[in-house]
Image (cartoon, rainbow, N blue to C red):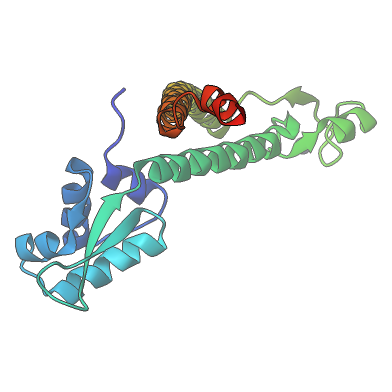
Length: 234
Ligand SMILES: [Zn+2]
């Protein structure tokens, strides 16, 4: 199954977005980041208007921004906005998990009444049926086991689907995290190697400099100092 579109995900978790915001989300989805000037231009909005909508998305945790000084205008900043896809996926996953818990509770509730009287239609929990020797306390008819209701069947299938989807999403997330971690590890190792090489170069340079300094110092000494010293004694 293909991943649901952002808008479907948002609607499902109960976030309603207007048409303009939807257009902004679609723009952000295709780019790493977009300046709000472009957003405003493309949607024929004032910059402040675009920024207001973007801030709203940011308050939902769906977008992030970085700001940079505008090279053309002093005291003015350019804002670049990005869709936080990981955050959105995480919000969606949490929502699905909450849904699962809710449906499991409903199912438990629905399954509580395991016996019914086919004569008067009353339902009983197992303990009550047992206490009454499996006959209806109201009309005396024999109690029979309740067949799974439509609701139970529906809940069971919804729960299965949710579990499957959550499992799939978690697997993908885990895989992405492993890839990210490995990438970072490689970067760290590279950085370390670079530092080590730099250190080696510096040590080598210092050793060379010392050697040169020693040579220079030696050349400045008066020649045959010892011999001339002995000469003066004579
Ligand atoms: Zn009855």
